[in-house]
Length: 463
Length: 158
Image (cartoon, rainbow over all chains, first blue to last red; front, side):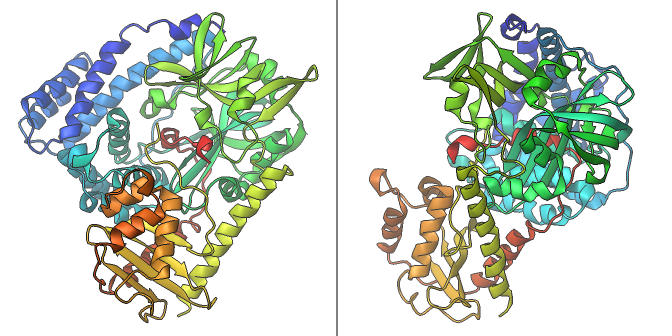
């Protein structure tokens, strides 16, 4: 890997991010009564997209918003402009990563979103709430405003087609609720909340979040590791893997995910328990096995829409072997326009021959003279991989990410040398279940929690 | 990057449900003596007005003029789940340094001799608990949810 490319400045990046930051600052104070400083931020955003097809609409939106006369379409135009800017940042960063890793991208047209029928009234309700949020600003949020999201989320969650937006809103609203009242907030996660806000705005456009299968995958799936996501009331496990087509075509990097809403007290091993019955791939990950796929639907972005009926257990496959052999020739999938965002960059890489730097500001690997920070916070609690194991590792299989202006490595697994032999520790080793002592304890605690919830609810209901 | 850390693992037998919502710390507390009985308890932010009643809507015998043991247990578990700082901020209780724990929080509130609130909150708490439980019943999906990249697991805290 050419690590120097990861630390070299990317041309134009600072300018694009400055325009984004200028707009994000506008959302801090809110758009109800715009101040002159906010007009500057709005104009900056409009200037930054002046050479794009969005130019006219964004310029108008910036002007109306600065005058306090914006409607929902104007807010949508601003969210679109911000997303387009971050999309360009994403593209520049991904190009850099591909150069550094030396991995080509499969060419292919991104699938057009299909305009599936949606309960449009719910999307309109969400947009209304988001616009109220923008008017109030982060400093103006209170429990009444944030509580307005709950009924909409409740109505959306049972609807599979609205799950993505509902999951985003639920996590965002919980975070805002925990930060109320905004007037006394000491630190505001300005870019993060603007990210979540503009993303939610775009997802209220019918069809924007549709993942459409464009093909079928038949062949061998070799897991690399699992990226686990959670907020208080949702969880997602995303398996990164190399797919080798049965017809001898070029191996591809793919993902397979499973997600579910959850009560906030289901944590740790409880997350795996919730997801496990719905994706046999998690058991394969724990057992260190490949899976054979037969016509598994796959999107243009390389996301398998998993169906247990189309997968069977395969031969043993050690992820580090997969990374050293199959991953070297694999190509990555293109990213659909709406998903181009730096926070979504998660590129599987294998690092070896680094020096570990364990300092006050956190763990880092020195790779070919360059410092690459290691994000050990993203490793699942219910798993055997610890920061200590990472710090004493000789090889690391991870996801290259980008956050707050620099690249980071999220470990998925490490190899340590124990008595002159490599021993692998996988972050998601417990995904499919475990015989590990600590793991069994965590499993039991999680089972107990869910049983108690159900039993107590039964008592309440039987009154 | 995460703003709200995930709930800390806790045993649910005593207090199966606790949340900071509707301007109250509220939840469901198991009876210590009768396995068939649960209490719906709450404390209001700011005024600390408290309320506790059974699932049959009978007032709790202990919650006359002062916090009953159910309410104390509720606050204890809220602190376990959310951390004392967040509970204190939600309830608008000023506690500092060593007092920022469940005991300190409780005594800071009881020292103001809070009034007994009305029991109308119980029905709302009950429906919130059911909403909470409904989260166990939604079908998982295998369609990608890219938005979850903004919510990484924060394993290190557990």
